[in-house]
Image (cartoon, rainbow, N blue to C red; front, side, top):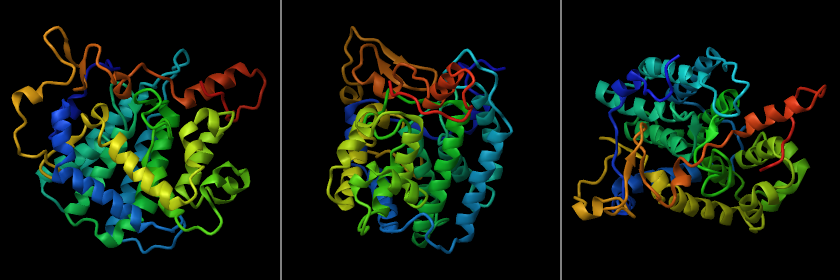
Length: 379
C-alpha cells in the first residue's frame, strides 16, 4: 500500500486551486473581499430558504438537483467498495480511506459529467468536491472540508447549474445527503476530528447542520431551543430537523449530558428563540470558520472564487508571530505552521481518535455484551 505521507499523483494532477492565506493581513483582505461576501450571502440565502421547513417537506427536484443526489450516492458506493482494513491495534484513521480517496479522484470528472461547463471549470469544481471528504494523508475531517462542499454548491450556483428555486432542495436534500455520506465515512474509516475538539465545540466534525437546522426550527410552535434536552422530542422529530438529528447523533455515541460533553450546545439551549439561535450561528460561522487563520488558511481560491487582486505588502505577507528566530514549516499537505505558533491545535493539533473508534474499543472491553453500538464517556 502507498505510504500515507506520499501525496497521490492523481490528486496533484487535478489540483488547480491555490491556498493564499498565510497571515492575518491575508485574512483581513479575504474577509473584506467579494469572495467572502459571496460565501456568506450564499449561506444566508440557503439558510433563509429553509426557514420553517422540515426535512420531509415536499419539494419539486430539478434535474440537476437529482443529478447531485445521484453523485453523492455514487460517492457512497465508492466507499462501500473499499471496506476498512484490519487495523485493530489503532484507534486512529483507517488507511482504507486513502483507497476510497484515490478512486474518487479517478472518477470525479465522470461523476460530474452532467454538469455543462468547460474542462477548466470542471477542474475547479472537481478540486472543491474532492476536498470535501477529508484529508487523504491525515485521514481526518473538519469544518474546512465541509466548507469545500458548500463552495462546490456555490460554484455550481454561480455557473447557473443550480437556480435560487433549487436552494431549499440544496439544503434539505443535497446537503443533508452529503451529511449522510460523511457520517458513513466517519464511522467506516474512523476519520479523526481535524484539530482538537473544534473551535466552537458544537460537533467533532460539523457546523452547518446546526446553522441550517436552527433555521428550520424558526417559528416552530412547540419545539424550543431547550427542547433538545427532551428525549421524546428528539425521538419524535430528529428525522425532520437537522439540529435535532445532530443532537440525537451526539447523544448516541457519548454518555452523560450535553452540559458535560457539549457545553456550548447546552448554553445555546438557554436562548429563548430559534431566531436568536440562528442569527448567532451565522455570526459564529463568520467568526470561527471564515475568520480564523488556522481554518481560513486552507480556503481554496480559483477563477470562480478568486482571492482579491489587491497587493498585500511584503511585510504583511509574513506569517504572524514569525521572526528571525522562528522556523516556518510547510508540511506535506501545504499546511503552514510556525514553530510555537499559537492556534496550531485548531488546525492539525494532536491526533485525536474518532468517537467511532472509541465506541469500538469500548465494545471490545465488554466481554459477552451485545455487539450493538454503546455510548461512551466523553474524554
